[in-house]
Every structure is written in structure tokens, then in C-alpha cells.
Image (cartoon, rainbow, N blue to C red; front, top):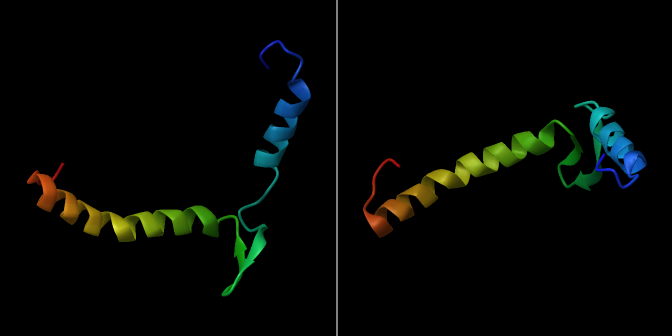
Length: 68
């Protein structure tokens, strides 16, 4: 709360973050079926790891720095 009387929106945000369980179905359907809230960050981490290696190789080729 920042003193402007917005305690209600802050409380709503806390409830939205606190209430869902990891096994709660996501609102959007995928072609492969329903996703859970647990699947979303897992997928983001997986995709980042999948694409980080090739990008690191390109950066090494571009600037010659290895392992940073």
C-alpha cells in the first residue's frame, strides 16, 4: 500500500497469486491438451535452456569470448 488508498487492488493481487494450486488447469488450451500452472514455468525454463546453448555458441563466434 502506497498511501493512495489502493489496498483493495493490492489484496486482490495477493489472492490471485496465492490461491491457484500448481495443478490448476491453465486458462488456454494447447494442441497437446490442457496445461497446468506448474507446466508454464517448466516450459519456459526448458525452452530457455534449449535455445541458450546455440546462442552462446554464436556469441563466442562473434566476440571470441569463451565461457562468460
